[in-house]
Amino acid sequence: MKCTASGAGLAVDVTNDGTVATDLVVRSDFGEHAVSGVAPGATTSHVFPIDTRTVAAGGVTVKARTNADGIPLEATVTADYAAADCRAEATLRARLAKDTIRAGQSGTINVTVTGAQGRATGTVVASEGDIELLGATLDPRGGASIRLPRTFEVGEHVLVVRYSGDGTYRPATTEVTLTVT
Image 1 (cartoon, rainbow, N blue to C red):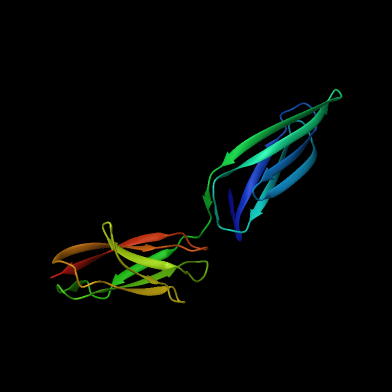
Image 2 (cartoon, helix red, strand yellow; image 1 turned 120 degrees about the horizontal axis):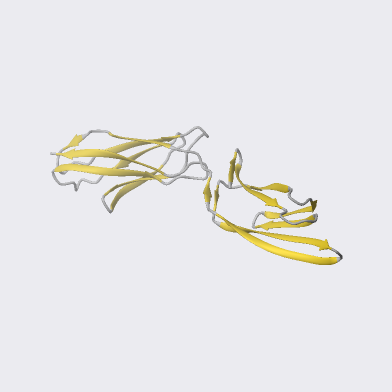
């Protein structure tokens, strides 16, 4: 996989290891590409453009056809490729409105998600351990406020804030520590 400005690209290189020129047909989930007369020892390359930034694992099939001493020969080879994520890195910032609250009070986590590729969309969720507390949808500026419940016991609480990611940005995670007195 190859990341491009507009998404991902599946880059395929095929080398003719034979002793005669060969015609090739390369097939993937993203199209088909044919090349005629690839010389012995030569390599041909093709990039299948993909209009998304994430690609599931898959495979490419290459069918080779040639004639050796008047005898038609055909071979098929399949190669797997790994999943790819070409989304940009998001910067997730989370700040408590108040680092310390009293038992029975609610708190707020103010969140911003930014990145070099423009506006981030999606959701943010706060959790403590395995317990998901509350979440919010990012506003048009990439910000959100997560209102915390009033149920925290006295002590320190490490809250994990997770950004869901979107078509442009990968998910991100950060932590804040809330003190309840």
